[in-house]
Structures are given as structure tokens and as C-alpha cells.
Image 1 (cartoon, rainbow, N blue to C red):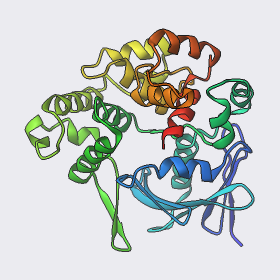
Image 2 (cartoon, helix red, strand yellow):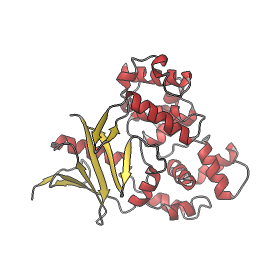
Image 3 (cartoon, one colour):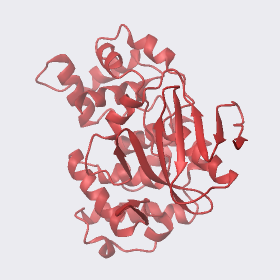
Image 4 (cartoon, rainbow, N blue to C red):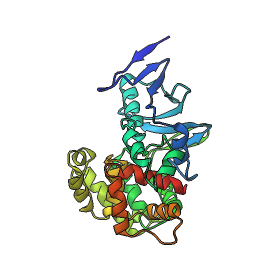
Amino acid sequence: MRVIILINVSENNWFVENDKLYINLPLDFDMAANLGYLGRNKNECMYDIENNVITRVVQTRAANRLVQMHVNDKNQMIVQFIDSTPDEKEWRKVFSFIWEWFDLERDLSPFYEMAKGDPLLEKPVQEFRGLRVIGVPDLFEALCWGVLGQQINLAFAYTLKRQFVERFGESIEWNDKKYWTFPAYKQISKLSPEDLADIKMTVRKSEYIIGIAKLMDNGELSKEKLLAMDFKETEKSLIKIRGIGPWTANYVLMRCLRFPTAFPIDDVGLHNAIKFMRGSEKKPSKEELMELSLSWSGWQAYATFYLWRVLY
């Protein structure tokens, strides 16, 4: 039996044995709850779920690698490469990606304690306990997804995303199916809106996405720079970008930059979830939302995510 021990900077929470990566998951993680969210739209093109196994491409420093992951009865996520035998650096990269994707560093105990007496959160937390804020670790992908989703319904946003990914992304084919990577900002920065004309988005959204790609390509915008700022600085920096308003900024702050205080207050899905939970015909006012968020202080992102989950 070949065992490789790989040690994270802070925790001994993963190892490789017989060419499989084992990730020791937090107690407050439930794979079924997370798969329920991940499988919310059949038009998803960045991963595939079948028999509780996720298959997706992960970009390592060496290349794009196709991996599969599932959770065993010991609360361990088991990951294996399908198309190659990885080296240690690639295992580390895959571990880091999964750890960030599922927000596994975060202790949810304080959130669950806060939600116990909350009239809106108490039931969602009971029903979906173990759900994490599923991330979008790549900044360009998160920004594009935010732009694509502006002022349209979720189903159409997924259609646009698939068109964009299949037009400009790369893929690995396995078992007669293609598994895609999100387009690289370097490639998109060289395009014009006319190059995106086949995708059913507005010309303005095409301009926004290309503009974001150019900012990232010339080094003005990066995940590292944003993470070096505090919440308010980061929010302001994002809103300065053409095409990024408060909703998109907070979406990115929540799902990519991992600020737990991110709160997309103008989100239609959030409004509809609150209407549903209250059995009300009218959406909450901004003042009501601000008041609600006071009791969610420090956990606005998780409160939003659990309320979103009610709708799926």
C-alpha cells in the first residue's frame, strides 16, 4: 500500500493513499445538501453529477485534469484523477481547489447557533444543515457569472454561461462526454463584442466581460489584490469596474472572495425567498432587509445562501 502524507499549512486534514486523495471533512458538512444545490440546474456545464459522484475539470499548474469526487461513510471526500497520474503539486492544487470550492475552512457552529431563533433561517437551517456556500474560486469566472446573470432569470443565465463556455472554453472528453473549463481572461481580452455575437447576451454585457478580461490581463485587477483589502475597499474597487454594480460586487464578495458579510440586498431570489418564507405577496423593502441583516451580522452571506436554497 502506497501512502503519501500531504500536510496543509494549518491542519493535517488530507492525505493520498493508492492514488486517491482523502479529505477529512468538517462535521458540519453534508454532501447530500451540497449536491442538492449543485444539481439545481440541468444546464450546468462546469461539472456533472451522477450517483452522488461529481466529475469536473480542475486546472492545475501542469494542465487541466479530470477528477471525480464522492464522500464515503467516514465523512471523507475521496478524489481521484481519471485521465492521468498526478504528481504531488497537482494533488495540492486539487485539494486547495476543493477546500475553497466548498468553503471547508469555515466553522459553521456560530451561524447555526444564530439561526436557531431566527424566524426566516430556522427552518432552512434544519432542512439543509451541512450546506456550504458553494464557491466560484476563479475571479474571472465569478465576475462573468455575475454579469451574465444581471436582470435575467436563472435558467437563461445558465444558457448564456453554457454558450460562452462551449464557445471559448477548453474541454476534456471522457466516455463520450465533454467536460469544460471556463474561458481564460487572457483569451477573452483579445476579443471584440462582435466575436461574442453568437451568444444570446446583450452587446453591453459582451463589452463588460471583455473589459473585465482586459483589466485582469494588464494586472489592474486580480484576486490577490482584492483579498489584500478590507470589505468596504474591495466592494468599492469592484463597483468602479464598468458593468459591476452593488449586486454583482456582493455576489463576487460572497462566492469568490469569501467575505461572510457580503449581502446582495437587491437580489430578486433573496426577495422571493423571504416572500415565500413569510407567505407574503409583496417583496421586502430595503429597510426591512437592512433590519433583517442586523441579526445576521457576520453571516449575511450564509443567510442569503440558505434562503436561496429554499427556492430550488
